[in-house]
Length: 284
Image (cartoon, rainbow, N blue to C red; front, top):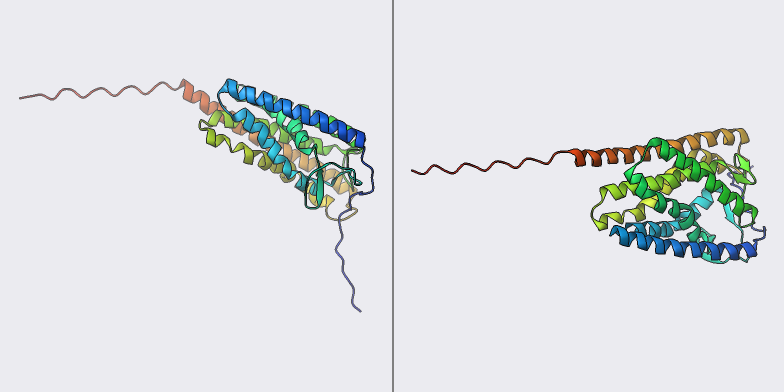
């Protein structure tokens, strides 16, 4: 007798849940307006700094928002649709709402644009982690609001749920948001060639994957192991993921502090003394 062995499948998204079309309109208008304002502000900063980097930063986050479907698959996020979503693009079979790009710019790009200059001038590990705590809080507020206004849901088993939001994710994204601002400060300190500043377009998605996917891997593996993963293991794994995210933020912070120390040493180093001129040759 042949026995068919079907591997366990992760939970399916709740495709039948309705979208709040009123809030879709509000989110689209508010977030795109905020993004336009941030682009203008970035352009003004670029003019005052005589460097295109502030504008590059905003545009890099906008371009990097196309990484969202990878996040959606791994973290079980479903954008409510029911045939009424205004779609920006589709990847992995997942339609992305028209406001996902400006949401990235406002949630991830705005803090980096506000913070990177001051971090490049005066950063301490204590300040970096305080900013990480603040961005964790603001991320949780943003996501809990969006979820409870029926714009998207996290489906399946997830640990630390508060108002239907897996709260551990806020710590992952807080580390990612703050870490990106820190690494932008490193770019400001180390680059003199405009072409080198274009690395920020690779840096944003790389840092996103580093902090959110990389540090989150213990919980993500368990979440996607079966439709009904062990709740106790998931709860414990979230602590491991948050600890890894904190470690990643610490590493980024150490990189910035080392870069600042090197810049300060270069400033304090006395100039190389001029080599004395060779004496005139003795003529016969």
